[in-house]
Length: 60
Image (cartoon, rainbow, N blue to C red; front, top):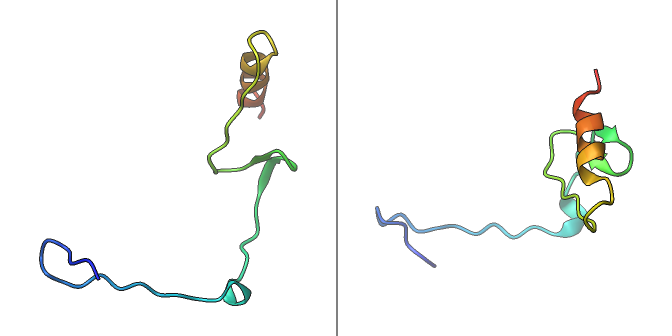
């Protein structure tokens, strides 16, 4: 185990995937842009990425 600078040992909790309770996701644009989450938008120059983001930012 790795120790923190104040010599408190770090603890690693291992859980099964079957024990994970999923959280509900709110969507700004289903199923592409989750609300309040990090989202990446990529594309070639001139594909309209900026226009899309400005349009989404202008939504009420």
